[in-house]
Image (cartoon, rainbow, N blue to C red; front, side, top):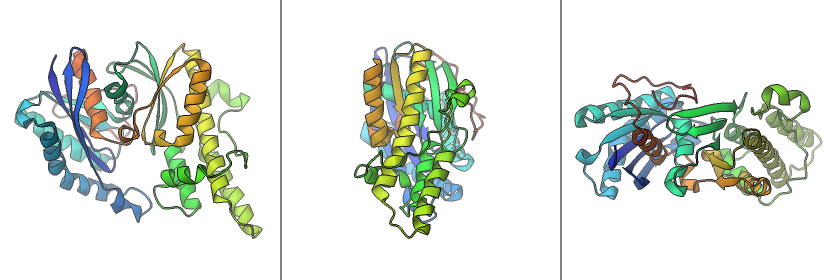
Length: 351
């Protein structure tokens, strides 16, 4: 479908995202990307409350859609296809987005595409840096996911090489942030403190990097043990009546996470003969991860692609981008009774 206008809707967690992408023979062009967040409503609870997020999506859907159409200067009738996050994510929020997308698809008599949220975090990079080469490695790191994907075709052929066995990177940052008395979400606050600290001050463990773990879990991640190690270190200092050097703890913890993520990913690129790495997801905003990934990719001769921070957090552009890729490849539309799947497999691009 050449010269098609794809509407993307994202509601997997607490952001209501709506975007419009134009598909042409040359590639995909982002026309607009509008996001409404309910993060402030969850901050006092120290985490996302699905019921609150679902209600916020209900309230924000029509205004966000209206703003997107106005910014792109297009009429709803001009939309050629509707893409929506089908999973993974929270069931309530996913259901709100899917219901809205189904209503639009029926009302407009347009094809509907239920797409994978995590793969969307990789696909959005095509809007920024152009179409992917034949094969890329994608590291998607966020509050709920730390996944390593081998992408031969972002619309049809994605292989999950590894994932987190416990806490995702962003989740670990939030938990350590809470431990250190920082506001929710912890990631940005730890990142800020880490810039002023010494990343070598404390040698925290690197999960699943020992020789005995490499055979079974070379591409998997684990941050639960690291989180526990930070907690024990802090508790020991408190029991001894000593001050907690927040900057050094934050820097040393962040360094451990970035070290594991980049080392395992670069090793996977070498094993699979991949020379392009895409990093996406909310945690890819972390400064230590970006800096270490750039350094290690340069040493390994690997091209590094990371979208601007605004496209790393959840947004409609990532769903419209993946929808555009699916439309461009001629993939069959989803059924109008498409289900949402909170644990949608990462090998499944569309429903």
